[in-house]
Length: 394
Ligand SMILES: *Cc1c(COP(=O)(O)O)cnc(C)c1O
Image (cartoon, rainbow, N blue to C red):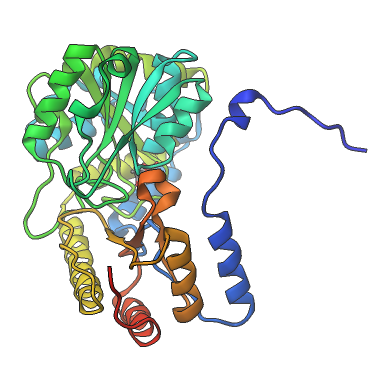
């Protein structure tokens, strides 16, 4: 008989996985022969550009790359990141002390909590938000304080609404613009306010910039690090995942405050041994090569966004087109919860949308659609929704 092992409290504390129910329904539909179209997945459907793959192949042949890499990343990789920041944001970074490589930014986002949070400490987390912010903090024994992102606040946290005693106990704050799941973007004032808030309460700011290159209509999202004083109060997480269709390759970085970068690197040197150097070389190719492929992707997503938003608006929604990310965040019609609407759309149209409550309690009443399916499939999905659900009311 198998032994029964008592799980550690930190694992028991992890929030339940909220998409389990919809995934079971999807499996049932597929088993019943329904041609399910998923608009749920936030993972680029287009392949990694060929010149990046060629670089991986070439570097994979070199025995020098077959040994352990350094856990902080090759200096040449960190220099490529620094050069990209200079070109794209006019931000100066010292590659050796202000950049650390990550095995995807998700890895660093989860691990940073172990560097700065003790059990009982408070961390400020956006709700709705990428689940890894709270997940890492809970594993470190800390307590998330959820900052509501609401339509009234254009999905920016209201810093003035954070009680002073919470702010005083808070050690870290996660923010993420352009935002998953809401598609919202942040203006310069917001970043300046965050930096003064951080100074007032001695809070480490962790900005997640995963979508900085997925923007439309000529909009260029800023880096947190380009604002005065940012490097003194925080770090930015980033990766090549979304920018170059490289989610499967697992390579990213954290950049900014040198002591924070050092602490994260020191923690990681006790956990992992860095990313395969051939993958680092491939990422360098992406960051330093022509950015034409990125412009092409932006065009594709922008066209899909326009098709999707126009179709939903013709059914009764009143959505603005998101300026960035490959997500559309929309309210569910009157009489529905996030779950009941996602179930209805799956049942009637065979289309998967993501219920907003999976990203936090303030996501209740919303759903997320990802623009990561090709135009024909998206048109088919929208056609089925129009035919089988019709006009909606709010
Ligand atoms: C996709 C995504 C990331 C990137 O994760 P990687 O580990 O770098 O692939 C980070 N943050 C958010 C909000 C994301 O949606």
